[in-house]
Length: 607
Image (tube, rainbow, N blue to C red; front, top):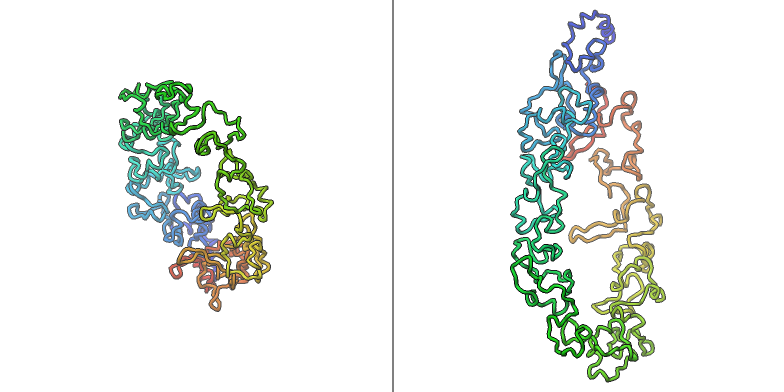
């Protein structure tokens, strides 16, 4: 029998007319440039069928999509088929190699599901050159490649870049109008009251922009009502309509509770703030004159509205003695200057009612030598030294009130517990306010006296002597850990040195969603902490050993050597993509990559 190579040599010397007779037929127009006996091996492997690898060597756009796992050819139903199963050739120049039943085509395999009107649209309405961005693919006479999934790759942007390109945030695939997904509550201007009944066109009018129909949905002024509405009060109230009106109806007046009278130049204080509007103003339904009948009256012109019960004996400046809270609340006496006494009034004492100190008569002397003569000792003797309490002025100020303390961080540094680190930013009340009472003595000086010891019973005294948190933590930040893992039986290496302690030692409890800690008997085998996607391929003695391929620096199999495997790579195998041999499989309902191949004969992989 003649051997295979002799057969090929005979073929080489046969006349060209003979090859014309044995050829299956002319190539299509797309492949016409490689017509001829010398070009057969560009698609065919001698003695074998057409090679997918050769097809993809020319059709790089398909190879690129396969590499990205995108498009129709990357779907599980298509990617493992031979190219010629769908795109056969040698049927003549006019043969269309892209042939399929459009009515039966499953568009889901392309990775883009057709919904709504897209499902009713002819294929060529979308698959046309005007919608293709890639210049090389755009030049092809007929192609289904090159389309993007964004709406504006096929549709004109009606909003002309004034809104986000995420069209489906407002629209669906049924029609451009209406926009069923749009919720005005997500906009900067929420619709309330009567605004809910206004048609969109009233605020978003249609115009022409750049020679095209346009409807503005951004850049609309709404800082105040007069951006859209006329001001019937002619600017008397500085456009703050919401203080008197609400969005349900302009005719509903709510100003008695909400209007800020301060904008008029006459601030309402004390009893004035509780008086009804029409106790001072005449009732009127005329928007141009309402509340305009008391203009230019100053706050200290009390006699303009009130009767002077003192018959002008103390002048017209009532505010020298009285406050707006109540006529009977005296602020001071117009003829009395407290500074001429031995106790000039300062700070908050200036606002104290005279009767608070002068309970009998103003002329009875008061012992002001110490604060405690008038005020109770809030600290209940906590600061007594030999039965003598320091004066309150040591820490408190008449100008700021009792709640304000003059005790500074510098003062705290002189105590038995100087503040450092995060303690410097801790509010005073976190440590000193106990059950609504401030206390400053015997509150503890060690960490566990103030903080919950979450490690109790979890750490060995070897690393945690006498519950000293400083062994691992600092006062700068609780999350900052200075523990040296080398002290344990498992020094950290590679990526393990860059992870947070919590990743290994903390976990959420399944029952009450609380943190559980584990520091003892930590397993060191990889599979105790990490999942892998190899299934049972590398199981030995019931365990999968990751070390032969991986190390602690990264998950990438950086130390795997294919030459140590059962099948060594040489020749063309060195340039074959891994996934050409190691295919995706379904194992126990899970998608995995098959790495352990049982057969290595050529015929097991090559037809």
